[in-house]
Image 1 (cartoon, one colour):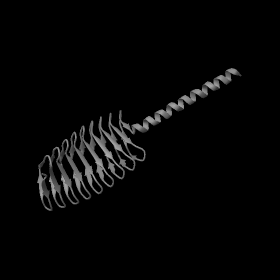
Image 2: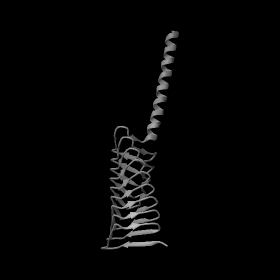
Image 3: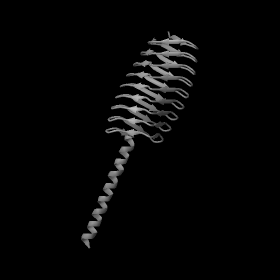
Image 4: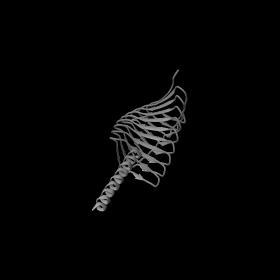
Length: 209
C-alpha cells in the first residue's frame, strides 16, 4: 500500500524519509525541506507548494507540477527530477547517474550537472544558467531552449535539430553540440578534399600547358 505525507497550507515538514511506495505531497502554502526520497518514493510539489533541499536517490522521483517550486534538490544515481508545465526548479544538483528533465512549459534555472549526470530539455522546456562539469551533459531537444549554459572541461551541451541554445560559455575541453561539431568537421574535411582536387587539376593543366 502507498503511504502519504500531506503538507498543506501553513504546514511545514522537514527531513522526511520517503521510501518505497511512499509519497510526500506538498500543496499550496505547504513547505517541505530536506526530504530524502528513496527507491519507489516520490516528492510531488503542487501549485503554491515549496520544496527545498530534497535528496532524490536511486529509483526516487521529485515531481514539480504547475505552480510548484523546488529549490536545491540533489539528484543522485538513478534518481530523477521532473519539471512539468508551470513548474519551477532552481539550483538542482545532478550527480552521476541522476537526471533532471524539463518538459514543455517547465523551467529550470541554475542547475549543476556533474560527471555522469544528465539535464534534458524537451520541446517547450526552458533551462537557464546550467553549469555542466566534466563528464556531465545537457541535451536540448527540438523545441527546447537553453540559455547561459556554462560547459566546463570534459562537459557537453548537445543541441539537437530544432533545439535552441544561446549565450553558452564553453571552457577548455568542453563541447557544445557534439553532433553539430562532428557535422562541421565532416564538412571541413569535404572542403579540404575539394580544394586538394582543384589544386591537382590546376597542377595538371599547368604541367600540360
